[in-house]
Amino acid sequence: MRLSPLRTKPAALGATFAEQHGREIATRVAGRAGEYAAVRDAVGLTDFSFVQAFRVPEEKGIDLLDALVAGNVPRIRFGRVLHTFLADDDGMLVADCYIANNDREFIFLCESIVPDAEITRLLDPSFEDLTGSHVLLGVDGLRAWEVVREIFGANVLGLPYLSVEMYSFQARSVYLFRAGKTGEFGYLLLAPVSVAEALFDKLHEVTQKCGGRCCGFDIHQELRLEGRFFNIHAEGRRVRDPLVLGLQWMIDFDKEDFRGAAAIKQRRAAGLKQKLVGITSIDGRRKLAPGGEVVATCFSDVLDRPLGLAVLPIGQAYSGLDYRLASGQTVRTISMPPILPKSLKVKLDEV
Amino acid sequence: MTSTEQIIQRRAQVITTLKEELIRRLNLPYTPEDLHEDVSLLGSGLGLDSLDALEIVLCTESCFKLKFPEDSTAILRSINSIVDFVITEQDKRSGAP
Image 1 (cartoon, rainbow over the protein chains, first blue to last red):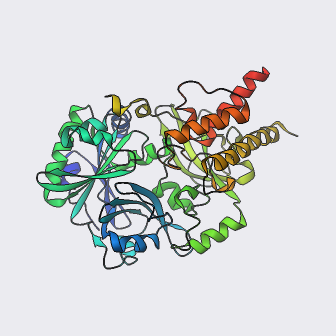
Image 2 (image 1 turned 30 degrees about the vertical axis):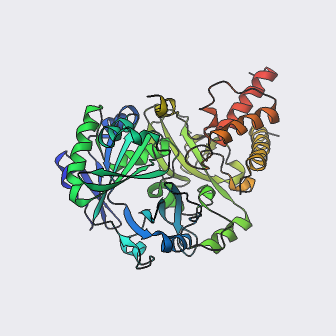
Image 3 (image 1 turned 90 degrees about the vertical axis):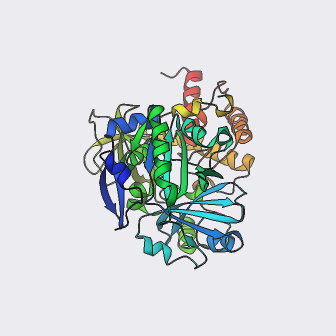
């Protein structure tokens, strides 16, 4: 099993761990309620080192990556990040990907539902695997920008969503991605192992100063659903068809080829029969039972009710309807995302 | 026609009109069927910018003869959130309960 080089840090804070596809993930650190509040009201620091990271020179990377993922790699502007996916030959999801154009190189972050080796074997030898030599830390929350500003300076506030920039920490280069899948401000830091512990300690110190705490990955799974960000580990793993999941926006249909393109285009031409829809309970129950049509669930503290995603027949996949699930529970379909994250009210150019 | 079918038909009409207009005016490389109603319009998802947001407001206002409030952040999150707004405004205008 692959362990994070930073394992001892969340472990010392009381983290619980779980294994997924041969990787160990810190799932919970401070308790669900505390972690939820940390991200929605302050900031959460999370070890995402289970995500695979690769570096490839620009001249080779354009064609190699473009042949692999569904999105359009040549169109990624300098300093920007493409959010797309990697499919198998049947056009079924394998990984949720960020590809960053960092001048003479591309950085490829791969959050997959298969073991590391299955991703690595798809890649040309020119891809440098950074997974063991680097850590990936997430800083997410209403006050996340304060944490990165204190460490890297006020310039970070100018980064638009889905962009990348290099910063220095203890004389080593750190890739800072403005990304995140919670609806609040989000940053990912890809840093060499040599400074990983010092960087974690500094981030943790500032995070605590901002009223936040270290978080596990489980809370991110709930926050992704509440903010209606795609989660490959929940609906992605259970559905796997990017069209049913509504991920057409990640696909460049004009591209001649990418992995799984023929199968995806064939299903697109045949027309969708099912679609993913947001649901909530209407019978006072505090939980939605996963299984059957329900492919993801969470509890929204903001709304004080459970939320879920269900795969429904296309003719009934509309918001505002009562629907009886196979489990017998009646739910209401809703428009997503149902919450308005507090970060949307903060203008970084005015702080 | 049952009330559920009426709700579906009315919502489907607004969705189709809105999607077709957005694709045409923003020159999006998708068919209406490709656009999931919950996809984020700004930032993540379709990744539209502030100029596109203005175009969405103008296009929705002109298609459905209504006016967006000054702060439209919540409405502009997804196609579904715009459709909710359109239907609510139409109901207000017709005096529906």
